[in-house]
Structure formats: C-alpha cells, structure tokens
Length: 147
Ligand code: AMP
Image 1: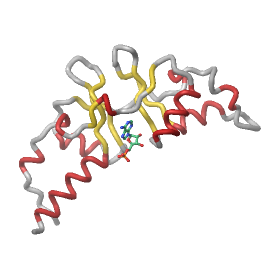
Image 2: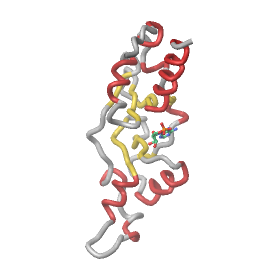
Image 3: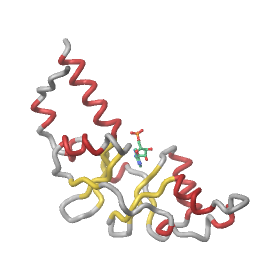
C-alpha cells in the first residue's frame, strides 16, 4: 500500500497540469468530417475538441464517430465525408473540468477517459488534462518517495 503524502501535488489545481489550448489540435463547428479525419490522422490523436469561433467547447470528434457516420449497409460511404459537418457526428455529452478544480477531481476522471477538456471561468476552452500528464507526475512522486 502506498501512502501518498505529497501535499504539494495533491493541493494543486488542474490549471497547473493541463496542456494549454494553443497546443491542442481542434476542429471548428462547420468543418466537415473529411477535415476532421485529416487532422486526426495527421496528429495521431483518437479524439479532439470541437470549438466555435469564440472558443466555446461543443463536443469531441473521434475517428470512431466519423466511421460510424459513414458506414452504410454494404460499404463505407467515403463520399459522404465532405458533406457532413462535425456537429452531426460529435459527442456532446462529455466530461469537463474547470481550471480551478483540484487535481484529485481530474485524477478520478482520467480513470475512465484518456483526456478531459478544461474550461476557464468564462466557460471558454482552456486546454486538456490528459491521463499521460498525471501518470508522469505520479511516477515522479512515487519514485522519489521510495528513495
Ligand atoms: P496522450 O495522453 O498524449 O496519449 O493523449 C491521449 C489523447 O488525448 C489523444 O489521443 C488525444 O485524443 C488527446 N490529446 C492529447 N494531446 C493532445 C493535443 N495536443 N491536441 C489534441 N488532443 C490531444
């Protein structure tokens, strides 16, 4: 049993650990599925945020959601890709964090999600909090603890 007493880490907020919005790949409302698929393929990410021009978060679009939208009864209907806007395929019921939420709240959420979108006080997209980031921190703390 590991007793994690790194007060310093546990009392920090999500803001200290998130990837800031300017480094997060995203698509905009109105972009079509072909564009989203290009971004997802080029970046190698499984899902990315869908934002509007004001930087409000509307949902997430992932390769699985795109494929689901273009799978017909007998074949994959690739020709539909440039006709469907991302808002018709994105997932809107998504977990969200606030920049001032405690790290522990984010830790609980990334048990079930590879990353969670973070919003600021004005409800604008601020960045993402990823499972990788928190695992890196915990890895450091646990290794130092055992020294
Ligand atoms: P990672 O923790 O780096 O393996 O990322 C897990 C998931 O978080 C990726 O598959 C993406 O869906 C998302 N993600 C991570 N970093 C970024 C980024 N810079 N821009 C957009 N999405 C990201």
